[in-house]
Amino acid sequence: MYICICNGVTDHQIREAAEAGCASLAELTMRTGAGANCGSCLSSAEAILDDVRNRRELPLPVLQRAA
Image 1 (cartoon, rainbow, N blue to C red):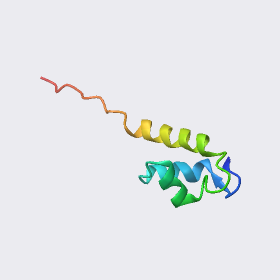
Image 2 (tube, rainbow, N blue to C red):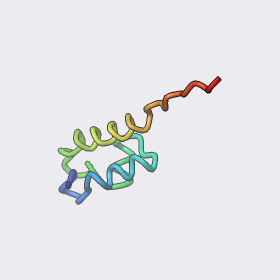
Image 3 (tube, rainbow, N blue to C red):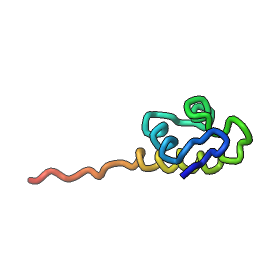
C-alpha cells in the first residue's frame, strides 16, 4: 500500500528501511523520500517504524536448562 503518495513510497519500502536499521522519521525521509513534500504521511510512516521497532525489540524467552 502506498503510504507517501507524493514520492511513491510503500509500506513495504518503509518496513525494509526499518529492518535495515532506520530508526527515525528524519532518516526515513532521507532514505526513501517519505514525508519530504506535504508531510501528510508522517504519522502513518512513524506507526510502521514503531511497529517494526517493537517487533525487533521483543526479548526472546530464556528457557531453563534441563537438570
